[in-house]
Amino acid sequence: MTDGVTIGRAAAFAGVTVKTVRHYHKHGLIDEPRRDGSGYRRYGSADLLRLVRIRTLAAAGVPLAEIGPILDADPDRFAAALVDVGRRLDDRIDDLIARRDMLQRLAGGDRALLPDRVLAKLDRVAAEFGFTPDDVTMAREGLVLIRALVPEGFDDYISRVERGLDDPRYASLIRRMWRAAEWEPDDPRIGELATALADHCLAHPELLPVPAGLRARTDAAIRYSLLSQHGQEQKPAWTRLAALFEASMRAAGNDILAGRPVS
Image 1 (cartoon, rainbow, N blue to C red):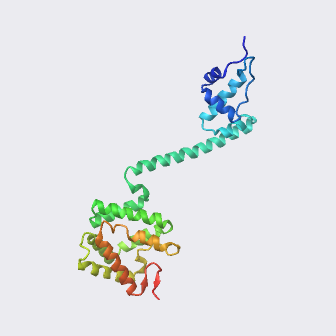
Image 2: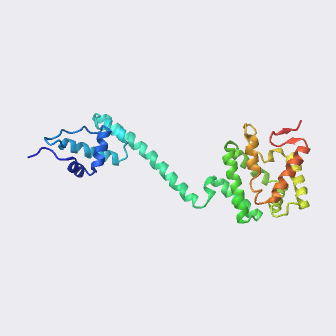
Image 3: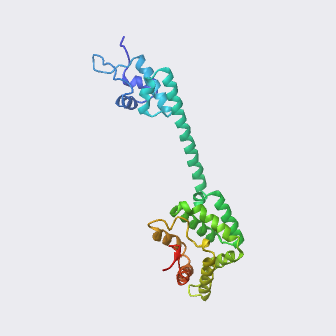
């Protein structure tokens, strides 16, 4: 009677493929078995037991690089190693759940890119100001840009906007600004609105549309330009409004980006 079985039978008995057994050999997880007189490898019961253990640990999520030391460890170290692997699997599960939740949120568009409290505030403001769906999308995209370009100043920016909207005068100007998006670029009301916005921001500099932390960046001008240009392509009136607003601020001696009087 021949002692041991071929690699094909060993793989079948262990519930893996021949390729997998060879992969285990390559990683040093199981020693090459002896060969018979014809040069074929012969796997004994100890080899089969080792293969089953390797397959089980691999299926449980243990990295191949860690399986060898685990199998060769004493019982206490074996148990401790499995606890450690289990802890890492828990972390992976938590990460996968978070990824799944993010995918579900992304089904609603870029709402997944903003905190729930900000979305709730935006929804309330949109209802109060009579925003169209396109307005809401544009406002949300602007907030996403602020959070991406100046993450350290995002929370402060949201807080300042919230406080500003409690001011009836500021809220009225913001309503007019959104209505101005539909005006013609040469509408004389744009100049009047730009002046009114500048006057209010000069009196209340904390309302300037510059997130905290932006001025400290070496590429502040580039980031500010990306933020200020948002929506102007779709709303040409806003391009003129922004230019006139900044010009009014400079004329009054205030450099918006520098946050200090113009010398």
